[in-house]
Length: 384
Image 1 (spheres, rainbow, N blue to C red):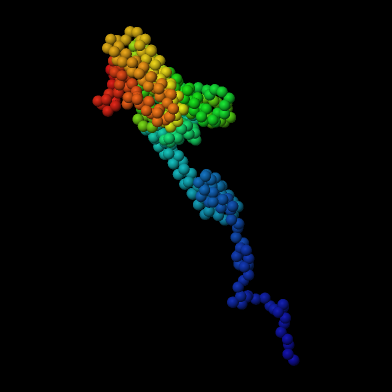
Image 2: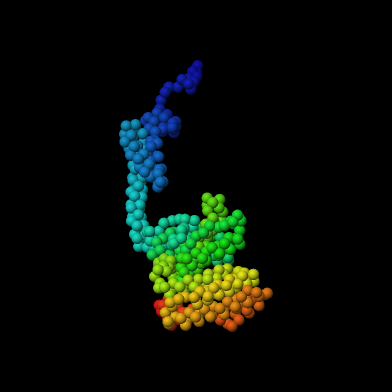
């Protein structure tokens, strides 16, 4: 009689077969040692944050905390905590070093003239912060492109600087727009700017002949709502090269009586000259209107020159010659102001090929002891 084998469920326990691998659990082979401890979240966070420059200080702190806690809680990650602490500390130290060195270099840069105008005395502002007499450097350039009249300045940022340092521009006067017209009307505002700025120039620098090579410009707010209701026009003198190193404001108190009387007498003619707009070269109406102002200004200056008392003897002849020349030019300019066409205007304006009184003015100034251009020394100036 054959005895059947016992069922598999009752097989005697014993070691597994050599080719039978033990089951594997989440922390390693089941039945082979206990489970591994969890990984320290502080250690992981320390390493990750220390690699981010802006968060490196936090990574350094978390790494130190992790190193203190790991021996007590038995978690893994001591190596990560050490790495996070080391990297975070290195980043913090390097950042501190760069700040110290960079600050020292910045101080040296500004002290040695590395700023826009080479001065630590500059202060940032905008065009609407400028007052009469302020010297400044604009961020976006002084003047519109060649041939473009009254183009808006899109960047109003400026550096306000001491006038005894090189500076591209100086405000010589300000005034408020008049009337209820739209402030953004370029033609209306340009006319007011020209009319208002010219007298202010002659208040600021009465002897315009003595000014260096500068150009004239102005700025007005495009929208009063954006400036708190400001309607101020700011008029300035500017130079793209050969920057002035002193204020261009003139002190009539430094002149003698004859010089003051001469400069005052020449003001009507000078104001008429500076009242020309860019349209004079292309627009007949603008050209004839300017010619009429030149005629009136020249005649008024001639009258005032003849009325000066107490001129030194050597100046009487040149001043009289200048007055006569201004009277002659006044007649030419008045004729040009009535020209019916542009071609006729050009013909009448340059009637004798000598449309100004620069020669006579040079002689009068020299006799009075006022500065004149030295023709023998490449346009330099000399005192008479």
